[in-house]
Image (cartoon, rainbow, N blue to C red; front, side):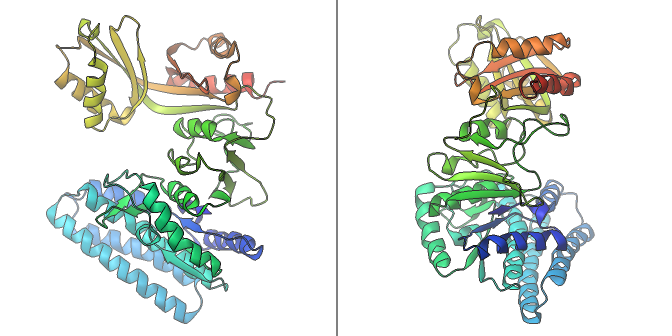
Length: 462
């Protein structure tokens, strides 16, 4: 069971989480709990890292005091046994003092390296995990808290987006977790963090607690992974855009992967990797609606689903960059050079299209990466391979997702016909050979109308 930070940040929410765990523990489930940092903590640490050169000692002390207050106040309200409370408060204050020392050292240097940033990020989970563990103890459940290093998650040294070394990780995690489960102990594990072969702390990408949960599940051959959040499951569309969007009862791993990559915020994009080739299912559930079964993600869905399309998703705050020039024509490796240069400057390319004439390449990037992308292209290629760079800001990517589209004729015609009836211009189109996802780019001002009309066309068909 993985619990996100938005489920842990006050007394009522935390006690609800403890009640959920206790409910299934009472039914003799063997449970491993993975928790995130309290809501907003990692974002605040990230913002502090970005501003470390400008921050003075008073601002740092205020930040640290706020961090302390949030966690200590939660302990005061939830843990009532005096001995346990004293032990936990002492533990948290030691962690906070360590956090203070590291921050002060970095602030003096005025530089945050990827390695030190990961170490700072780890404190969010390292502070929340013992609170959950002690809260379980307070209701009579035997529990132990472990960080990613202690539980055995070994990664490469790509700080900020580390990849687990699964063969070694599986052996280590299994060796650590299985004896605890046999003793009826619930391990509470930090999400998001692991360590490299040198023992240094690494993080596995923002939102990585989902990923931690599936890594552990694959290591101990769990039956299911339950990702607890504040929504009933994956939806047929964003409920902020489509008011009558429905919960998807069951989807395949491949469909869920498409949904997570195309705007669905319910799980980490790589979270499914460790379990995709196993019989382990993933279920997205609502901690505020425990009676709802949520969305089951499995290798072979059993439910018959009579819709060609399962979900209409959208990515906003994106921009389209079109590069053109005669130097692109018939020159092997030109696209690779462009993408390599962008990758070196940490520009993530979301979609790609190239004309058959090879005279232009169009890419879609996040709006926040536009300036960086244009600078990179101008410095490396303008006047050489590239003669012109055109930018369209404020575009949105709409994706029509569903395995039912595979081999079905007319899905594209139906999609673009529905959009054309509303006089919405399609700027760019891509579809993979898997036919799981048909994605296209439009002006952002038409985004909500397009999503609604497609949802009506494919999902709410009368």
